[in-house]
Image 1 (cartoon, rainbow, N blue to C red):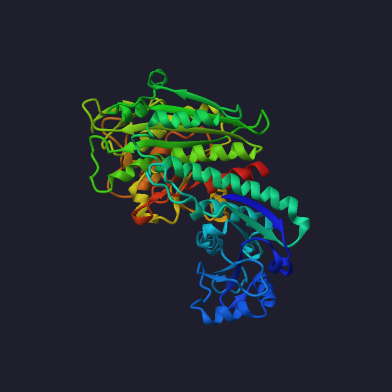
Image 2: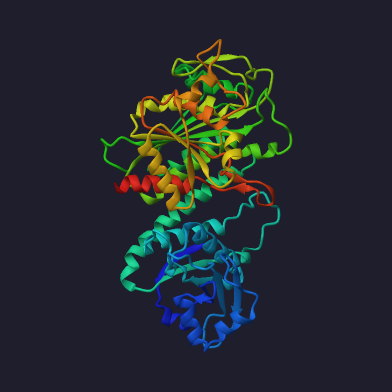
Length: 500
């Protein structure tokens, strides 16, 4: 879908040449643009609403065709629900309304003009609303049909959406905001594409090739380590995960230098388990197909790097993805094996299905060489986090309050929320092993917390945060597919850092 911005005052909407217009209704109250169209149609719009089964609930839509006095063939009404006492929509309702409006627009209309940027949203500016609408439009129009022998008709998708605002003086800012929103949406959809790939395609080497493609124009420097190089570095913990697979593990580094040469980079570390059988600690068969999504942490880092490059963000960013396939075989790591990490600490592997922390701990030691300003790791790490937070919020763990607050605020601003969980020393004793420095699991309780406590042992050299996205990285059931989260959160976090 192509996106554009245009200055169109509500009074001019009736004569606008777009085949379709999108306007909002809050409960029974018409927005400024809806009111202008009602006046132009001599009350036909309000009369149609009064006789339709439409009560203005958030995300509810109604298509009105051929209204008198209006040049557009279709006026799409979208409900926002009743405005709260503040008079402003929450970011969550705003997100729902915008997505619903795009999905309800018939592709046969070809082009449409949306007036939703005029809606009042808590904590927003016109620029942030334009960025949001651009991102939401790309999110709503996303399709993954690469492997369908019969593709959906192209007419099902709207070709172009223009975002309207009233004052021509805002045109420059709106264009800049549109670009940023497109960058986020493009990065998020890139991550979704990677997550949705089947595991017989998206093995560790495939992710490395996707990273190399990002560096083709020279804007991102890409370095790939194979197993021989990782062995020399002492990354035996990471290598223990790929020991049962026919595919070599890969450690991929993507370096983007958009800031000053002396500025310490922000480092993002993604878990890239391209398929997780559980290894010798084999998972139940039901739902195992969804373990192709165990590389969504790596996919989100690739999506962020793609967006940062497009946006030419003025910040130094390093993306590292630790990629392996966790398979059972005669060469696979066993429960009870003890391996040495790159840091020199030894790990007793009690459960080979707790493999994400095994690849991440070596990657987190490796990134010390970048002398980072901050490190954020992103991983579909624990089922315990899904139990705790479901599909709504990602789990956030950090020993630094300031860094945690930055990430929480970024997630709230873009409706890609996280919830902070403890990384208290009280939990560390659950990881004690009688035979090694640390065990890779901590027992049946506090599973997401002990996983974070495990990672914390390898992050003493820099400010660190961990995002457990096991609940938010993909959806199951009829809507099964990658969400591309937490790409929006991470990009908003980086944008704020660059602005500061």
